[in-house]
Length: 301
Image (cartoon, rainbow, N blue to C red; front, side):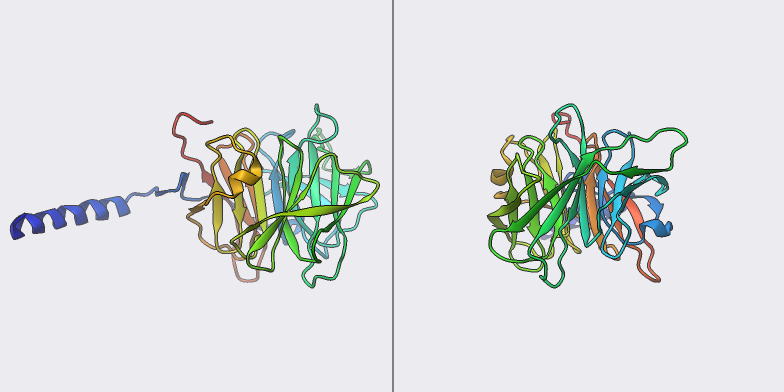
C-alpha cells in the first residue's frame, strides 16, 4: 500500500469511528445504555439496599432498606411510587442487605427472601434469611401485616464476615451469599431443603476475583447471573445451560456501568428483557431507578 492509499484508509477509519460515537444509543456487552425510569425522591426508600422483581405483581419491584430502618418491604412501580407497604411482624431489621423472589416449599407459590446478613464490623456469628409467600396487591389496601414468616438461621463455614448479596438458584432452590470485605470474595451455599428449626452452616464453595460485591441476581429461564460492586457490573450468560457453580467459574462480561451514589441494588426484569439498578439517597446527589435493556439475538429469550 502506498502512502496516499494509507492516508485515505486512515481517514475512512476515523470517519466511521466518529460516526459510531455520534449515535444516540450505545450498545455494550449485550445491553443498551442505561435508561432513566424515575428519580428517587420518596424518603421511605432512602436507604435501599436491595430490589427484586415481583412475580405476582406484574411490572413491579420489591425494595427494602438496610440497618436502622423499619422491618418493612415496599412494592414499588417503575416511577418509584410505593404501592404497598408490608410490615414483617416480630422481625428485626438488624442489617437487611438484599432481597430475592423465587421458589420455596410449595411449588405452586412464589416466595420472598430477605437477607439479614450485613455485618460491617464482623460482629455477628449468625445470619438470617426470612422467607414468606409473596404478597399480592389488592384494591384499597396500601399496607398489610405479615406474620407467617420462616426464619433460616446460619453461619459461614470458615469465619465471621460481612455479606451483602443473596441469590437463589431456581432449579435447585439452593441459597447463596457472597462475602464483601475481602479480595477475592467467597461464595457460600445453603443446600435445599434448609431447616427453619436448626442453625445451619453455609459451605464455602468457591472464590471470585472481585471486591465489595453488594448485590447479585439470577434469571431462572436462562440461568444468567448478574453481580455488582460499587464500580462494576458483571454478567454471566449461561449459553451452555450449566449449573450455577460451573457457570461462575467462567470469566464474566463486564457491563458498561456509570457509578451511582451508593448503588447496592440490582435485579433482573421478570421477563429477562433487562435489569434494574437503584442507589441509596445521598445528600446533594441524585439517585435514579435505571433500566438496562438486553439486546436479543433472536435465538435466546
